[in-house]
Every structure is written in C-alpha cells, then in structure tokens.
Amino acid sequence: MLRLAIPNKGRLNEDTRSLLADAGLEVRASSERALVASLGGEFEAIFVRAQDIPELVADGSADAGITGWDLVQEASRPLESLLDLGFGRCRLVVAARDESGIRTLADVPDGARVATVFPRVTERFFGSRDRRVELVPVSGAVEVAPHLGIADIILDLTSTGSTLRVNGLREVATVLESTAHLVTAGAASGRAPSADRRRALDDLVAALRSVLAARGQRYVMANVPRAQLEAVRRILPGISGPTVIDVMNGGSKVAVHAVCPADGIYRTLNALKAVGAEGILVTRIERLLP
Image (cartoon, rainbow, N blue to C red; front, top):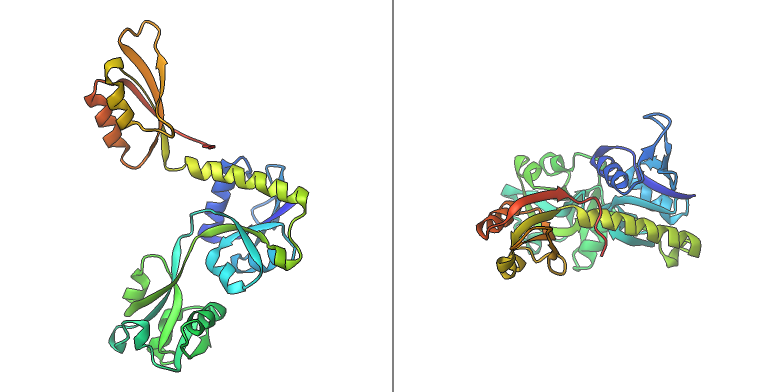
C-alpha cells in the first residue's frame, strides 16, 4: 500500500481531504487525532506538518506528498511535481516599510538585512541577482521585523497583500507563486518510486486530475429548435461541440448536451433561452476525463 503524506492541519489539510474524498479516497481514521489513516482502502495517509513533507518524501518515508510549492522550494530536495492541485494559492514576496524609500530591488542596499522563514529561497533569489544580503532567520511574525529594527526588508508569504498593508509594508518584488502540489522523489534522490508504485501514483494523478478538471464546469442539457443548432453551437461549444440527440415526438426540437464553464453560466442560459431553448437543466460534474 502506498503511503501519502498530507498536511495535518489548516486550510491545506481541509482542501486536501476534500479533493481526495471527491476522487473516491475518503480519509478513514480511527479517531480525529490519528496520525495514520486509510484512503479509500487504496492508500495509507500519514498526517504531518506541511513543512516536513518534502523531507519525508525525499527520504522515502512516504511515496508521495501534498504540500505547498514554496515549502518544496525551501527544502531544496530532489522532488518531482506530479500535479499542480491549484489550491493554497499564495505568493512569496519581498516587502519593505512604506517610509523606507525601497520601491524596487534596485533600491535594496548592499548588505541589507532580510527577515524570513525561507532562508534557502532568499539566498538563491538574491544570489542569482548578484545582490549581497544578510539573512535574519525568524520562525514567525516576519512583518514586525522591520518595525523592530532587526531587518531592513522581509521575504514572506502573502495571499492578498492585506496583511502587509496593515503592517505598513509595501511589496517590492515577487519571488515565486505557490500552490499545493502532489510530489514524489525525483530520480536524483535515488529513492524514486518503483515501476509498480509509479503506476499506482499515475492512477492517483489521473483520478485527482479528473476531479480538478470537473471543478468549475457544469453539464448543460436543453431542448432547442433544430433550426437554431448553428447558434447553439456558438453558445455551447463544449469540449468538442455539443452532443445533439433526437427527441421522441420532439418535432422540430432536439436535445443538446454540453460541458460549459461555471463562470458566467447565467449568460449561457440567457443565450439559450433567447434562441428558444426549453427544459434547460444544469448539473455539477464529479469527474471529467479527456
């Protein structure tokens, strides 16, 4: 049985559990505090800190793991991303106090002190730009460092930038954008999954990808005038065009089925009604396979 490391708490834990459940891999644990659980009887889950997952996967303690890409980059271990899961979206940015006068990286003085919980990423980022900085490793509350005088700038995570603004900080540069990824050990680690385990991981990727592809999509069915099919084709392009089905005793009406983006679905329905569509039905999609 393959072992999958997943975050033990927070939003990453919630989003991971939801995705796995939608893929038919619901977490089955003996108690809420259990550190190990079954995933639909197909995999074994271990619950660990998100920042520990890259190390566990690289060392072979877990066959794969789900964690933030920012943590993968900080770990600097030979890991391979199997799938970008899309949730947990955030950015790692350089920020400075509003009154510092620092507006771009060019304004950062040589030898500037940088407070961060990402020392490896920070060193690589400034090193690749031939900028010499002094690292000030901290374990949390990075935003307060410039106000306490222990750092000139910070390198930290943000989702909307609101926390930075509240604390009188201005974004200077984006270091990387991060989302949750499914990762496994890369070939360079010497602990890459065996052929059998890789096939099982490929099946897991396919299941998760089908769920992600279905999110944000809707299945639309409607009876439309046969004479309006060309207009309907423009309204419902679908994946490869709408499916058209004859309706028993439908006369001049035919049934059309298509997959449509959920975003703006109201406009799609209004356009269908404008060409005489009737009996319109919209449903969610559990999985979508190419």
